[in-house]
Image (cartoon, rainbow, N blue to C red; front, side, top):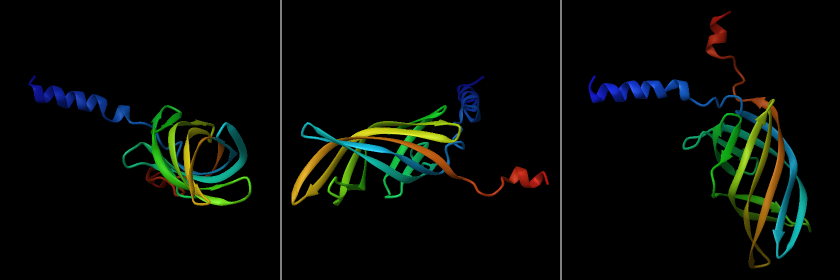
Length: 164
């Protein structure tokens, strides 16, 4: 057996059998939870609700995208999707006084754990805003429960159509 055959056999052995099952994660979810901001030794916790769409990623297994457009890539291992560290995005943040600011977020770590079509999404990072002309950076943590609103594929699979 030559070296090329050994590589081919190895690639085939690792191929389809190692594919991650992303299908259970895919879809649109409605989420509720809370976000806590920490700044200058003080913290403020606020309720949070969002719609999150989970799709297959181009450079990661999954992408979790909020209603505001913040896209968080993640890598899947069994029922846990680990967010890619140091992902940046922009999202609107509501201050305790009701002021809404565009915040630059850096998500430093987090996980999305799937159990019975419900995702528990927890992540932490930093949020940077400009308020009254001055820049501020705060730490944050977010904890949400995402309940499936729709499946990723609303039409039947080709195999199901052939069985009719």
